[in-house]
Length: 382
Image (cartoon, rainbow, N blue to C red):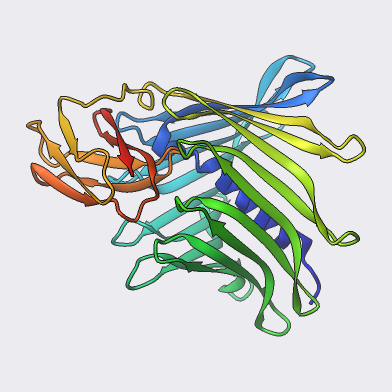
C-alpha cells in the first residue's frame, strides 16, 4: 500500500497530544500555558493559552494567542467554549477562529456522549453552514464488557453526496490486566478496495510501578512492520516524570538516533511548571534548546495538602483499599481523584458517611483527592 505521511504524522501528534494534555485542565485547573522558542540564545514568546473555570473547577473557556514580535503584542487565534454535564465532562465544545477582519468565526463544534461509567462513547464534529450545523466527522469508542477498558476507536467522515458516514481510521487497544495499554494498532480505510489496511503500531512497556517505560512506533511497509520512532521515559524517586526522549530509526546504520528531548520541572505540589524541549544537533553531538512550555495554575489546584477537617482518608498510605469519611453535613458531595499529571482517575459522589474505594490497580505513587469545595488531600499508594 502507499504510505500516507499525513496519517503517520497524526499518530505522532496524538502521542504529543497525550504527552502535554495529560496535564489535563479538567483535572488540574491550569490557567495559562506559555510557549517560548529559543532564538538567538534567548527565550522569546511564541504562543499561549489561557483557561477559565466555573465555581466547580470545570473548564468552561479557553483562548489561544500568538505572539506578534513587530507589535510586541498577543494576537487572537482560537477560542473554545465548553458546556459541561454534572460530572464536569464536556457535552459540547464550540471552537471559533479569529479571522483577518478581527472577528470570531465559528469553525466547528463537537458534541460528546458518555457510557454509564462516564467514559467517552461518541464525539460528533459539525461545521457551520449559515445558521445550521452539518455533520463532518465522528468517533466512537468501544470498551471491554468485563473490564471496561478501551479496546477500539473508530473514526468516520461524512460524505455529503451519499449522505452517509465513510470509514476513515480505526485504533485497536490491547490492555494488560491493570488496564495499561501495551499495544495500539492503527488501520486506515482504503476506499477502492473497501478494506482496512495496517498503517502504524505502537508497542509500550512499563516499569515495576506500572508507569510507561518505552514506546516503539512502527509503520506498515511492504507487508511488514518497519521501525520509525522510539520513546523512553525517566522518573524520579517520587515517580514524577523527569524526561521523555524521542529517537528515530536510521535505516543506514540500523540504529536509533536522537531526535527530541523533553525535560520536566515541578513545583512543591508536584504540578508540572515547565517542560523544556531540545533537539539533537548531530554535527555537534549535543542538545540544543527548541521550545519551552510554562504552566500556571489556579488557587484551586494549589490548595494546601493537609489532613482536612472535612474529610478523612484512611489508611493513608495504602496498597489496596482506602476509606473516605465525610465529616461534613453536606449530602452526596462530588469528589475526584487525579494523578500527578492531572489525569482524572476516579470521580463520583460520596453517598455515605464512609465510602470505600479500591486503589489496588493504581501504580505506586502520589494521588490527589479533591472535593467540589476545593479541599485537597494527598493520597500515597504504596
